[in-house]
Every structure is written in C-alpha cells, then in structure tokens.
Length: 145
Image (cartoon, rainbow, N blue to C red):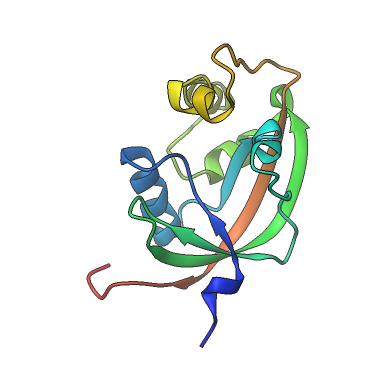
C-alpha cells in the first residue's frame, strides 16, 4: 500500500463546483492536463511540477481521491498554448480560444486575485503558463465513488 502522505497535494481550482467538475474529469480519465500561471507557484513557494512526481489529488472537502503522476511539464507563453493541451484539460474545450476564455475567467476571478494578493491581476499573451500533463495512477477514497 502506498503512503499518500508523502506526496505533494494537488488542488485543482478552488473548492466548490469547479473543483468538483475537475476532480470528476480526472477520476473519469478525461482530464489529463492542467494549466497554471507561473506566478501561482511563487505565492506559496511551491516547486514546479517534476516529471515522475506523484501527487495526491484532493476534493473540495480536502479528502484524498486519487493519485496522479506528472508525465510532462512545459512553460509557455499564454499565446502559445495548443489545442491538444486545451482538449486534454477534459473541460470540453474545442478550440484554444474557448480554453483561453475559460481560463482567463478563472485567472481574473476574485478568488484568484485574492490568492495572488493583486486585485488588478490580468494575464496577456506574454504571461507564462505551466502546462502539466499527468496520468491517474490510483483512485482513492470511498466505496460510493
């Protein structure tokens, strides 16, 4: 049995409806990539993802629901995010423009601006984005999942 306490915690979005949808997509195997603005990592002095690292995925209740393993990491300009990555986020994006609209809404949200301690935070074409590709290696938790 794996000791999941030794893994870094992976939180997708903020607790609530968005996180619940993202977790469902991860557990269903339809979400195999994620995007973060590079500046997010400096807020909590969090290390960038490393290929091979395992992370414990937590739901909105902070309960461990799965283990993922990073298989690829790339840092690109927001303008350079491609369609394959957008589709693999498992949120139904059929174009990069749709992906970008969805992510800009999140990155410009009150919650994100509060997290960044920057009420005027905005992304643009030059903003650096961390693209992480992962695979689900274990589903954890309750029998009713």
